[in-house]
Image 1 (cartoon, rainbow, N blue to C red):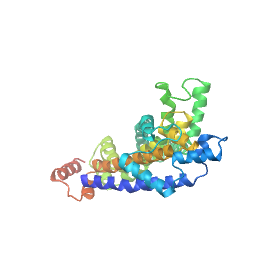
Image 2: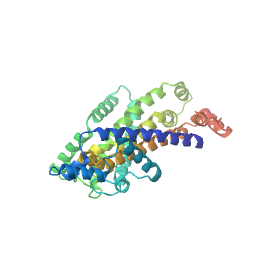
Image 3: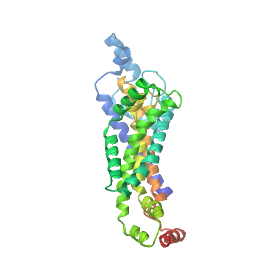
Image 4: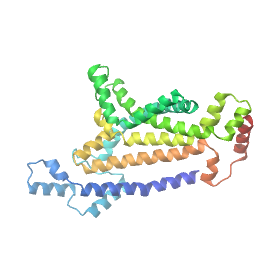
Amino acid sequence: MARYTIKRILWIIPILIGVITIVFFISAVAPGNPAASLLGPTATPEQIQAMEHTLGLDQPIIKRWLDYIIDIVTRLDFGDSFVTRQPVRDEILALFPVTLQLAVYSTLLGILFGIPLGVISALKQYTWVDSVILVISVLMISLPNFWLAMMLIKVFAVDLQWLPSYGLSGISGWVLPVFVAALQSMTQITRITRSSMLEVMRQDYIRTARAKGQKEGVIVTRHMLRNAMIPVATSIGSSLGNALGGNMALESVFALPGLGNYVVKAITATNTPAMLGGILFIAIMFTIVNLLVDLSYVLIDPRLKSRVTGKKLSKRTIKKMLAEQEAA
């Protein structure tokens, strides 16, 4: 297991280098001059040239790319922000807790409501309950989260004045952002849970368990849901990763001091180090989440451990699995 984990971690390195390279060269050839943006429209060509030298933008692009990668690998240095002249690493670490809390809260709510709704929808297939859950899921996943956020601000912050429209003013400031982000997570988890449950429900061992007189609750929780959890775990990991890196629009709408809002402001201001650092940090978090999801497969289904590690299952594990089959 440790060997598999180390191998997966090593695979992260070329992925991150690829992300750095793509974003770096796209930002380098994109329209706009960071030096001119910082100095303003009244700056002279001489002033712009001097600022480019100060920022290191007059160096060849290959040299800047190599220096950037070396600084990250050797010192974990993302450079200094063009706007604040502060280390990008320190700014990211100060803002990331807000993004992490938003992602965790919304994903937990998505799990809390998404899995039960998916199970109910599968058990009530082709009934009005299933139809209602499916229609709501499709509707929620189709609506852009920034549009839904603005509509909720209009109703609950402007008209009813129950909740703040922006910022984090206590617990009430988290309600609307978490609710909007949780809807996206919940609908995705609901749909995956339903489809996975429907596939498991058609298996022979489910019919065998019913023929042996097992209680329906035991069949659903112990046999159906447990065997349907691998696609659900993938969906949960995807939701958490998307929440960590895909809440830029939400953080901007609600003016949250998070990493997503930081990256949006960096792109607007042509703040290349802040933009590169923010995107790279999001990519690192996303790959870590995917690694944890892959490792969770072994906990969900012990049979996968032998495929991952190349070792045979222990006698204790085999006896436990046989005992569970006999109990069914």
